[in-house]
Image (cartoon, rainbow, N blue to C red; front, side, top):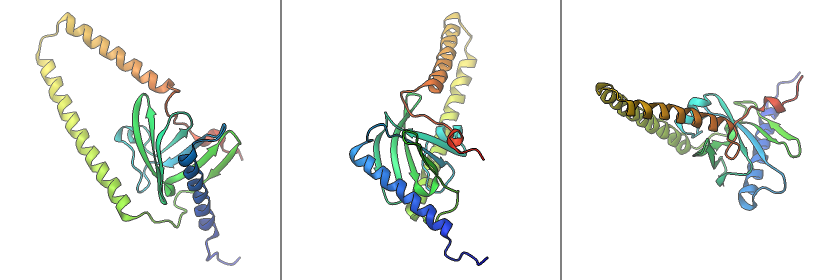
Amino acid sequence: MAEDLIRYDIVIQDALRGAVRKILTEVARIGLPGEHHFYIAFDTNAPGVRISSRLHERYPKEMTVVLQHQFWDLNVTEHAFEVGLSFGGIPEKLFVPFSSIKGFFDPSVQFALEFEPGKTAEELPEDLVDAARAQARAEATLTEVEQATTTEAEADTAAEPATPAKASKATKSENAADTDDGAEKSDTSGADVVSLDAFRKKT
């Protein structure tokens, strides 16, 4: 068989990513029509992806977000889309290059697209990659400062004798943390993060 010098696989992948770009551009302009809503899976380590360190810790390889009822500031450019979503009641801003998308699914009409990682002819502008790197460095520095502050606060607390009042407050704080974690797992009013495996055809 002759060698595929045209690389039809890459041409098709880029064309399908262009279709996703066009769909999101229309949604940014007029909103979601009818019952349409989207599951979008992307590689969280791909060049140019910008998400908070909190989300990256929870989804170190891949995450899938749902654009349905509550999202805001959807902005679509030639190379990426940016959107605001709430995770466990905490607002987040995501910047997702189209080259990082691994799957797109509209369950209202059972329409799905899958992309193979790395199969794209698109090269992100250097300024987008630099911005993502700068954000990662800034968040790493901020995390280190927060950890140092927390350590100092814990040391000060440990140096003080425990009192019933303080013990009661500590117990309430722990219970509140448990409640927040549960709320994040069961929150249906914000963004959902799921796996596309449930929608993929079994072979």
